[in-house]
Length: 426
Image (cartoon, rainbow, N blue to C red; front, side):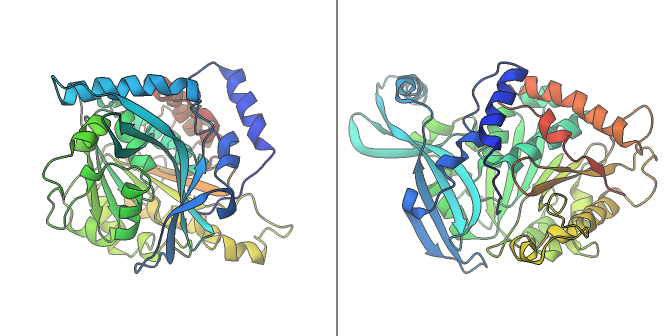
């Protein structure tokens, strides 16, 4: 995805979140975006190769991260030592942190596809044993926080038992279409102990980049036959990811083919599938496509929730109500947000009255600080006054967001991602 950044928002965001209530520090706060937004001259390239799947030149750039500060590294070193003792009882090993970096995945040098934070460490007995661990608690880009906030708050409003899912007492089946650096599925798997996540990525180069250069768990990779690519995880992968990577399944596949061939029933679906030209493929939103029809069959009938990341067209209109022509080149999908929303709503929940119980609904919200929109379509949202009242729907989801925020101990406020530009899909 490509993002437009608003510089004045950095310090305001930090003051605003602090003023609301004290919470754990958000290392992915937008105020830190200046550390990874820069050009190659501000960092260095750790991976660069050409894709044959429409993503052009795929590269990963590394930038220094100011957080966590060096005084906090010993705490992580102790955690690694304790985890090693759990995985290898009777063996003692000490770890040393080399540092933390931002790793930015880019297509064709200018499209910022995703950004993650990684930790680099090594075993003291073998200084050459350097490992890279993506930080699962860190969501660096606002649209990901928006997708998490509106998605989880909505499914909780649909009567889904999110409490037991978070505590691992209930399985939550999630499908992520589009992988990038993998920060979204990794965040969900680390926060929701009952989450079982299938990830679909068409480009093997992107999968390789996420693992080799962005610290995503290697044990998650699946073969075309549906088996694990690795029969068992390595010792260091168990140290870093035990309890998480067993619930991640990363498939190299075209999204439409995967959905057509896949019989699973999903509670949630997250879609973020732009290509190297920053285009959202038409077959993923065409109402007559097999993709949406098959997705409808695989979405839970009582609470199924789909969240789609789209380019926004609400904040870039000129005086006559249309986006300037130069922005059409930068944000080619922005003109079609309403059409995509109607397509998803009509196919997944029906085109009937929003007030009909069980029919579900759709809505969009604007993502702060970047030019993106989160589209949400859900089934089974329960409100006492019907579905057609925008304020009532927003109030219902907003009230659940506080529960979700506290339950998952999120370092950011869900509410700010729900109330901004909330529009029901007609």
